[in-house]
Amino acid sequence: MINIVTEEKAVAALKENGIDVSSISIINEGANHFVFQVILPDGKKAICKFTKIRETENNQEGMHRDTLLGGLLSLEREAYLFRMIREKAGVPTPKLYGIYDSRYGKFILIEWMKGMSHKACMANSGYSASVFLNSMYELGKDFARVHQVKFNSYGNIMDNGIIEPEGITNFADRFLPIIERRLKKCAIKGVFSNEDQAKVELFFKQRLKVLRPLLDLKAAPPTLVFTDMHAENFFTDNLGKPTAYFDLESSQAAPAALEFYGFRFFLFNFYDEEFFEKAENAFFQGYAEQHGPFIPSCKEDLEVIDFLSSCRLLELSESYWGWVDGIRDNWGKEMKKILFYYIDTGLLDYMSVGNIWRQRDKQPCHPLKE
Image: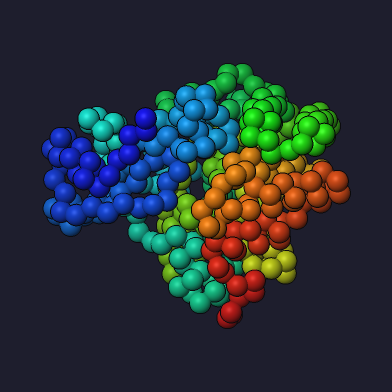
């Protein structure tokens, strides 16, 4: 049975560890944690996080793992990533106050960082074109710094700087078992007919084999990537400049393409197709100004980015299959439709992906002001 951590339990856990609380409120965001905003007696804000077993993970493999890339999640790993990324990449991440044990499980207490989510920033700006493009430009500058952090092989960045699995020098070898695990889950949940399951399996394995030379360590060096950048997992100021990166538990040693797909998948498509191109240009302008090391420069680079996007479509087709909450009821089917369009045409429809996020986030298709 899953232990649900309520506000009352969180307060009790904090007090067990000698931490008094003036007020506490739950933040209904994290898929992997029960997250609370805590006000300490001196008025300082903090974030308290307890491990959560996701609904989609319950009764599947019995481990608290990253659903994207399979790494074992832990508060120790998260604390290490915050410090390593802040020190090596020079971008803002929360400072750790401590990792504690309690009768309700282990929890972490970290700094509450200034700013607001990118989603809130855009709404507060009145859906401004200039604020949006400035945020993409500033993200580009930050990720130029992030991508200057290098590793010797591909894998999950664990606490103490260990990369696991060990010694993988071609990202195709890293990604094949991840794809196979996703395909297995699709078969269990009945996402595809038998015929379509065979078609999808053949496509991904053949495509990964074709792209293998582009995923070798020399062609695509292992670099620090965050992997899951979307509008609610980083904070900005009023002008869109990032002030905090905090959803980092999927961070990887991987080709930079694994980062770039995420920007296309979650952020560049915030508005319409015209602004997709403007957003991507703004990002790479900032990236180039800070000497970002991996600017996509040829058709093959874009093919790798789109392929990694299709892998995310596969994962989301499975994750949202059968999900019913009044908002995402059809997301599994919609992701599946976009996936098959890519398989059949070689074109990744990022605008249709953006329209799915728009069902939840309600932003307009075009900026409402300059």
